Image (cartoon, rainbow, N blue to C red):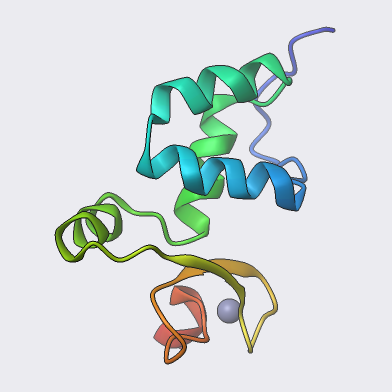
Length: 98
Ligand SMILES: [Zn+2]
């Protein structure tokens, strides 16, 4: 496999990989990144995808403090997946801001 140049274009992350990223961000981020690199994903893309899902450093810290486990939900507005802290949280960060 040739190493893809980082073009700024995001690859498609299947749901199973997205779940692995979410789990990895809350457990062992480095192990997750190495595993996905083994599958051919660029770690920059993986981290960008995690950020797009709402997995910011602050969000992860907040979950650690409160002991909450975020769930992946589909945004009611744009239908993109994002991490949600509960049933009251049905729209992604981007849509809530608009
Ligand atoms: Zn949205």
